[in-house]
Each structure stands twice: as structure tokens, then as C-alpha cells.
Length: 201
Image (tube, rainbow, N blue to C red; front, side, top):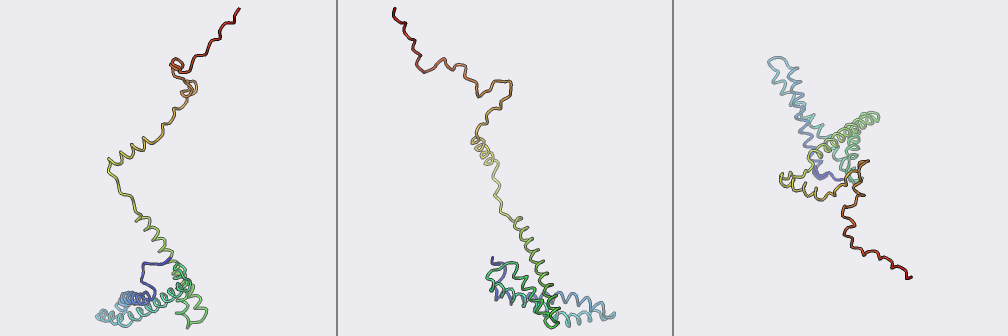
């Protein structure tokens, strides 16, 4: 099933590279700013914090941008090869991205990094699917409330359409189903039974 919540594939790569760089730069500024402030001597902590942000935050932003670009390129490529978009595409792309980024460290590190990347993406996809299911139940369309007069009219119509239930039979009492009306046979429309004539002597 196609994912219509994001941009088409060629444009999503460039978009996510920018998003990754912004996220890495903001996170790196917070982390390295605090680290530079703590490691600087008194009187120079603010300047040391700014120097640490300038030196390290862009590097972390670039790392995030590279990871986002490789991941989205792999996701688009796998979706094009498989011909469908599902949860397996980002999982495979995450494993491939982890392996590519660790290519200079040897096959063993590549395998560990691939498993780690695929596991992270699998957890993210599972959490996303669970949240989507919960949101779908929350925002499920509901029928509007009818006025009380209309509800009462509908209930009366339903009661009129329901068949009358027969009376329950209590042992020891006459069965209403087998009782005959008191005047049954008094005004019978059937012709009287003819009486045979006496035989001649």
C-alpha cells in the first residue's frame, strides 16, 4: 500500500537530508553547548559553550544528513524493486544504511551495524503501526445524535413492527392455544346433518 503521508520518492530524499541536518544541528547544539559550558573554566563558560557548538554541532548535523540521505535512497530503491511499500522497505533500508556507514570497519562490524539499524527501524515501524491503529479507533466516524423526539418515534415504530409473543403456558391451567370460544358452534354456517327418513312398513 502506498504511503501518501510523505513526498514522492525523489523529492523525499532531499527533504529528509535537510530534516536530518536540522535535527542533528539542533541536538548537537544542545549537547555540545552543555558539554562546552561544563568543561570551560569560570568566566569563560559562555564563550566555551559557543566555541563547542560551532566546532561540533555542524559535524553531528552532517552525520544525521548522511544517514537520512542513505536511508531514504535505499528505501526508494527497495520500494521500486519490490513494487510495493510496506514495513519491510524501511527495515531493509535501515540495515543496509548501517552496513554502508560501517563499511570501513570490516565485515563483522558491518553485520552488527546492519542488524542494529534494522532492529531500530523495526521498533519504529511497530510503534508507528500501533499509534496509527489507536488513532484510527479514536477518530472513527460516529453517527450524529438524533433529537429525543426522533429517537422516541423510532422506538415506537420498532415496537409496532415486533411480533406479539404468545402467552406462556403454566401447567395446571387451561392452555390458551387449545381453548375454544364460548359461542363456537352456536352460529355454525355449515348445513345441518340430514336425518334419515323412517323405513316404510
